[in-house]
Amino acid sequence: MSEKKIPLAFAYSWGLVPDPMIPNVMAEFKWHGVDKLVFGSVLITRVINEPRFWSVLHRHAVNQGVELIAVHAPWGQGYDLCCPEKGRRPGMIEDHKRAMNYCAESGCKTYTVHMGAYESVFYHTPNSELRPLVVNTLENLLPTAEKLGLVIALENSYERSNTPDEVIWYIKQFDSPFIKCCFDVGHAHLMAPFPGKKREKYFGEMDAAWGPVVEEYEGACENLAPYIVTCHLHDNDGYSDAHRLPGEGTIDWKTLIPAIRRCPELISMQTEVTIVPGLSIGKLVSAFRRIMGEE
Image (tube, rainbow, N blue to C red; front, side, top):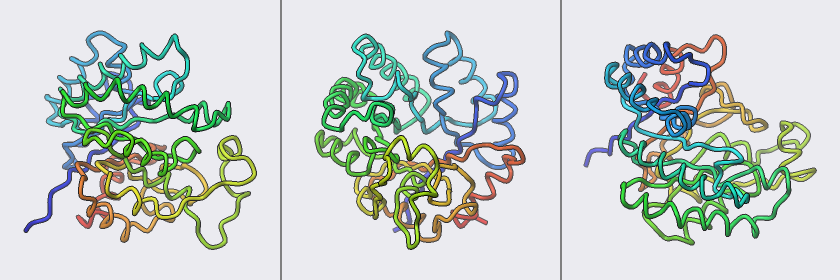
């Protein structure tokens, strides 16, 4: 039996791109043989807030021969699933529903969301108080996901509110084929222990998130594997959420990529590298083709 073909969608730092240049970036990806892109959070947030931006974006994609097949939902204090502000929650839920409809129209099969870090990091709100808020949001979004055939993918991160165990808790709470996991490999690597790892070398965000003792997490990929439908691929040194190219950090890609490909529910894979000066689309594409065994 032949191995199931899993598409790799490329993300880009669209917030750096003036609107007239959007089709040029799409065309450059296509020139390098890439026709699957990530519907990034910058783009989808604009779509739900700016009349006619969707039609413009969709036209560009069609004209350049690319597809926006994987999405990172709007995120941040006003969009995270655990948002506690009563005046914002109804609008937040409706914004996600609208975004989900646009994403389904674009051909996305998964909808990656943040459960939320802001309350955990800045207010030290315990998970016991955040869970009911996330559950309520998911209860409201699940019927839309079912209707659209769009899987809500909860993303693991590096805060108490977003550990792999928290992701699994929500998935088991619903036991639905439409609530699964987006496995962020960089976040998992940041939280993983390794010999000689030093607390003082972690980047500054960990101070607010954890204080003097970071609760490291081993075996994230193995524990999340039954639930992974998509993933974010980027590298780091185990101390910061750097979103670097594969090979510029310390992730063991030769072991990790085959492990991800074995996940039984996997639908897509996504790059999530920050575009920095000197990083061309050609270099980005080439780096991922190498770890995928295509170069």
